[in-house]
Structures are given as structure tokens and as C-alpha cells.
Length: 191
Image 1 (cartoon, helix red, strand yellow):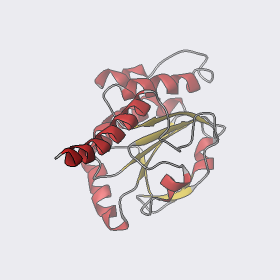
Image 2: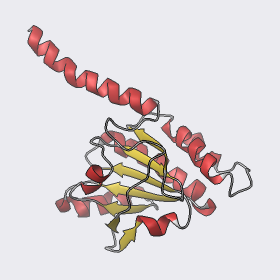
Image 3: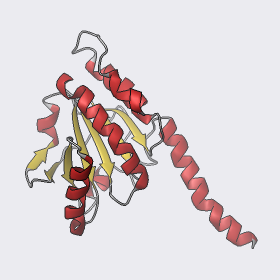
Image 4: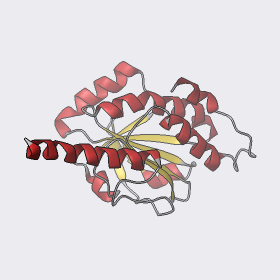
């Protein structure tokens, strides 16, 4: 009985460590850290068009949100990602969500995004190459990139209130370009 309890505690401890890292805005163990450079990439979106990160960074900061349809915390986080997209798209933020479902799930991803009315761009990473490129193993995982390609902030996992922290970090990146006038915080009222 004791070994069964011990084996059950190991995943729980791992989950608690991941949650505490997420609360601190830290990368996943071994993940890319704030201050480092974000690796460039090209992925296809749901329409089959190739999207190049470097091109998006020319327009300003980029929020990368990694998710899957089988990941319940990811699905709980996506409405907040949509609110951030709506609040900041006119101020220069590009939101790219990267779906890591299998290649067979593309229709399911397309249907889910449409049913929820999400307007952010969805990129497909069916072989999870981005997870290897960005050195993380768990989702949801968010990276906020400054327009120079540096990682300004990263967040592992999801808990209510994460959207507010992301909004604060986005404001830090957009404030110099907007003369320091905060706006768009209405996106965080609906955590």
C-alpha cells in the first residue's frame, strides 16, 4: 500500500512544481528563459498559409500560446488569449496560438476554433517540433516576445489570473510605443 501511495505522489509533486513555476512566470524546467532569444520558425496556419515568426515580429511584440484540444487547462486559457488579442491587436501585439494536436486532428482543431469564435491566428505544429525548439514539455505554455525577438516573459500552465499578469507584461512592451499610456486592460476584467 505504501508504494502505491508513493507512486501516486510523484505525479502530484511534479504538478505542484510546474504550478509554482507558472505562478512565478518562470519557464518550464529546461525551457527558454526571459531575456533569451526566441528561435525563429515557419509554420502553417489553419488556411494552409506559411507564417514566419520574423515577419510577425516586424509589426511588434508577439504572444505565442501553445495548446491542444485534449488539454483542459489550455482550453480554459484560450478565451483569455482571445480577450488579449482583441484588446491589444490595434496597438501592435500579434497573438499566435500554436496547436500541437496530431496531424489527424486538424479538422477537430478547425471546428473547435470556429465554434468558439476565436479570431487569433492558429498555427499547426502536428509533430511538436516547436516544443523541442523552445525546450519545453508541458502545455499550456506561453511566451511573450519583444519585437527584437527576445523573450520578455514566459508562463507555464494556467490558473485564473494569468491573463492579468500577461496584460501587465504586454503593457510593459507596448507602453514605450504608445507614449506610456496604458490601455487595453479591459481585457483582464473577465478572468
